Image (cartoon, rainbow, N blue to C red; front, side):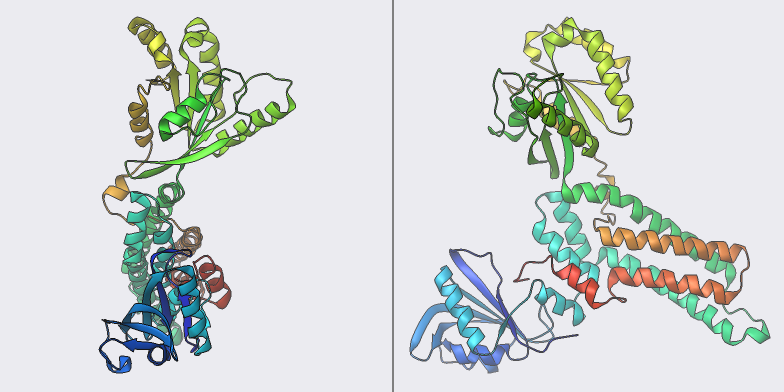
Length: 466
């Protein structure tokens, strides 16, 4: 599958900048670089050591394109496992394109999306889960997602899976060996040890599968719906959380007719806040559509902030308590934070009365003044308390990839079949089928088992220069 052509691409973001990096990989990359590069010291670039940097100019005959730095990485000690050249030039888009077109004329072809990392995988520099972590690392936008991607890129997840696969493979070999001596009725695989191994594998797989719930929200951000009646300060709260004028604020009820979303990182954790249309009875067709979307966003949210205006709650607390109970009963598994806005309009005694009323529903009160930025930090801390970051703090393996999650579920199903077969004393040849299938799903994660379609789907999501 390894393509022998030399590929080239821009490794830095497209557009003008101070510096740009153009990357080549393939057996002809150093030779091609020699044709277009003139060292200021007159060195022959093909005779230089790996991991060295050289100053010179990119030329095409008498035409000079730019003064550059050329970095040499010789196989197998490079990112792709092939000869790699990186040209650091000035960041003009014109210069970038001129150099790339020159390299194409000299025998390179443009790299496809993720082709450098694909070659790294095919040349054994990375396993498949590590290669996928490269894309996660590039797209990480908060400390938590960065930490998980770094751990996976270092091989934390794949090494755990590979170890389990190796142990299972050893027992599978012994059971397969028993099939060759079926007439002698001998057992090479110790059934007690095998049962202990299956229990251990089942435990690890369940832990990894459970971690996906945390990993998925860390990777994609935790969706938080801000809901309530019109004009209670939902948009003002969103602006206060983001510390910018993101949503339109006015005294006119029903200003927000569609959902507004934005992201915020709180203490290294990503949150996606969704400002929704106010919930009320209305004959306005457009506003009705917005209210319908509000309930859809509540369904999608991990956390719901139910916002009330302080004076209205004080006057009609029994009505609002009934409304809160309805929402909690409708979405019993979603954390619900009751937030009273414009708290500066109430006395301490009135606040305590509301707090006690909410305690009858086993709910805690969060008091804020969105306009005056009072209580916003306390609300952020409350949101953080809903995120289970224990595994992250303890540096445990966390699954964030849907493909891995699916393979883990299938592997667990096969392991449980093997356990049942072992307890039921089914013939070794039938048990061996389930073991082989479990090994297959383990191999799918790390790349021992793969195909062109799978690799195409994975690397199509990469940027061109990676």
